[in-house]
Amino acid sequence: MDKEKPSQALNKIKVTPLAAESFGVRSMCTIVETPDVAVLLDAGVSLAPYRFSLPPHPIEFQTINKLRARIAQAADKAQVVTISHYHFDHHTPSFEDWVVNWTQERETARQIYQGKTVLMKHPKENINASQRQRAWMFQKTGGKHAKTLEAADGRTFCFGESCLRFSEAVVHGSEDSVLGWVVMALVEFGEERFMFAPDVQGPMAQKTQSIILEAKPTVLMLGGPPFYLGGFRVAEAQLKQGLNNLERIVEAVPVTILEHHALRDENWQNWTRQVYAKATEVGHAILSAAEFAGQSNVFLESKRKQLYAELPPSIEFERWMKTLTGKSIAKPPVEL
Image (cartoon, rainbow, N blue to C red):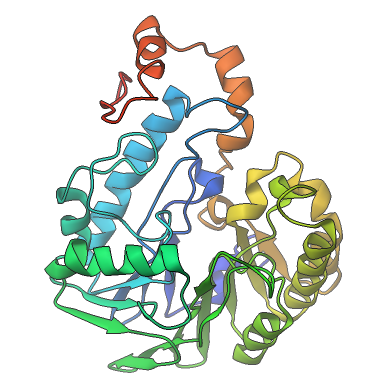
């Protein structure tokens, strides 16, 4: 494999990351195309409502606006849309929200899910209370526009010679996580396998690592450990467990796309130095989604304080910031 062009590990399966932390938002949305089917994985995108006690900077709003459009364009050519779990950076809700999700009431979700085969995390089994409520709401709103809604946990769906295999529900992070469960997806065509493992946080759980290794993906897109939560919401021992499991994975998988929680910490490269060293040692590649797409990383959330200091927002935006405690929040005054 040409290490300068890791996407060459796949020839018949085309993987295009659309939105992710390395693009400047919270997401892992990716479109995967085979000769038989186009699958839009986890069509959600969000911003952190507060980071460093600051709301999103105008540049973050400009970025989510651009990436929402990119996801909408991808949805136009996809026949299948997946939902690994019901956090809003992994599926699109049907209410108006111009701070976190950049959604117009009903319209944004309708455009993504209308006429699609939606393969989703089971809405009632292996699910915590908050996600069960969101799953119920999705079925009543955005999901009602779908061609079909199917619970995907542990199931396989084939389209021509292409198969989309879903794992059983695995924990969202550590074994004792209160954040619920997710389903991972494996896209297969011939001998090529692309695996999508969102929000497994490393993976921290040994069982999740085993499922990934048994799948033998050619390319793996994976959500890494949440370093930015270390020491107060996530124990450092759990972060180290996630890193140890990740090191074993990059040793086995030719190309790993490391994304999501891991990249929300400005020092993520220090945390993952040994993981990168292991990949290099065995001649494997590890990249961000942006790097896999041949683009430069654009980290915004972790640099939010710096953005406010170096690029102070307009007076109009500062006035808008004062309305954030209200029930109804208008679209922020940013140039789009």
